[in-house]
Image (cartoon, rainbow, N blue to C red; front, side, top):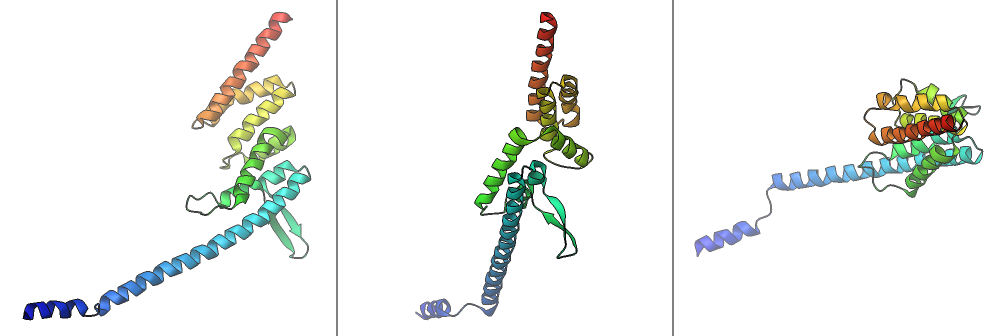
Length: 200
C-alpha cells in the first residue's frame, strides 16, 4: 500500500527542472531556425522576383544573352554598377534541394532558358557567351557551345560545326547526353557531306 502511494506521488510530481529547461531550449532553437528560414526565403523570393523582372525586360527587348545571364549596368542614382538579373540567376537562387517551397517563377525561368537556348540564341550571342566563359565553371557552357555548332551548321558553316561536334567529348567528358547529341549531329553532317559529294 505504501509502495502504491509512493508510485502515485512520483507520477504526479512535476518534471525535473533540467528536463523543462532542455525542452524550452529545444523549442527555442526550432523557433529561431524557422524564423531565420522564413526571413531567408523572403529575401530569396524578393531577389528572384527582381531578377525575373529584369530578365523579362531583356527578353522582350530581344537581348537574349542578357535575359539568360543577366548583366551589369551603371546606376546614376547609386553612383556604381548594379546587377541586373537573368533567368539562370533565378534558377540558381533556388537550386539548393532544401530551398522549399519554390515559387512559380523558377519553372517559368527554366522554360525561358530552354526557349532561349533552343530557339532564340544567335551566333553572335553564342560566340560572346563562349568567349566570356572560357576557363569558368558554367553549367550552360556545354549546351551553348553545342548550339553554336548547330547554328554554324544552319548557316552553312559546316567545317566550323564539325570542329565543335568533334571537340565535345574531350571538352565535356562527363555529359553523356551532350556527347550523344554531338555524335548524332556529326553523323548527319558527315552523311550530308557524303551525299553532296556523290551528287556533285
